[in-house]
Image (spheres, rainbow, N blue to C red):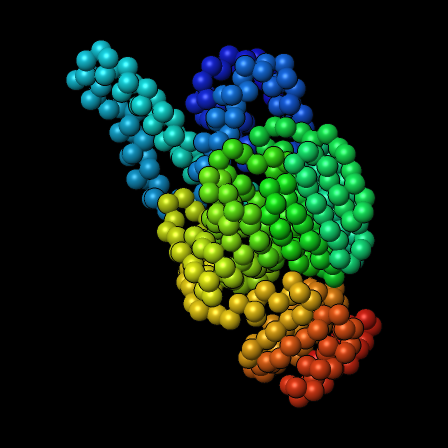
Length: 389
């Protein structure tokens, strides 16, 4: 990184249009974080500009252009070549010039985002058998191997994992992020510093900032989680997945966004949310309690319907409820929850299952209950369960 270049920057627009700075904001790593921590400590007067630039970049994220590329070129060209400025008096000229500078910067930022593929900051949690991890923004990693883990982040900077309280100095950069990784077979109950309560299901990851911004709260999710968001009228809460972005103020809802699934879903239990595709200028859908939003990854379609919310939120209380669900989908959920391989022969997707499964029971007992109700046979071989008609 060229420190001398950034010393000369006197406006947030210069930081916005710097490709290396832009990449750091969207895809931070330990080395870049250390560079910017040192830079802000050495040049504190640049801190305001950096925060402003970070806010603008993140406000337009995540992005995928829905405007045709040629149309973007035309818009940007018109902004840059506009001659209306010469018709204003000298006082209006200054105001208009400032507006044009900002509009040009934002237009150029959009163009830069169109040309740069944004990387989602979470990888699929597909490592069965590993311990759970929390990776702090300063690089410290803490592991936990309990089946049910409670994690609590306090506003004073303390982090409690079960009965273990950690006092670690957190990074205060605009992009300082903590990451929680829950492998298959384990679950976690998380309380953020703002009071938001999150239940993170098996095979899931959650990233959240060490300190929320003054105007919004954003977390990233891969997998499944149930959110009970602490109400804050002036600071909306955003759940961002690879495919959808959900905006709430104070609400309870379930989000399922596993990479290997064909859909991403959000089900609202109480309150109100606005959700849409994770794209620039994308339309959003408003959900009321009892509604589900579905994003189909294959045809890129977004739709909503009425559902029984207990079918989607019951896992938080230790059981699963199904209503005419293909038995193969039932087995997929059990695989994640118990971290055991379940192999079903072809044709079983035409068989459905309805009923309630107590997840406190052993997997063998749960599979036997399904077998009895659905007239299928289950056997065990080399640690895997085989399901046949």
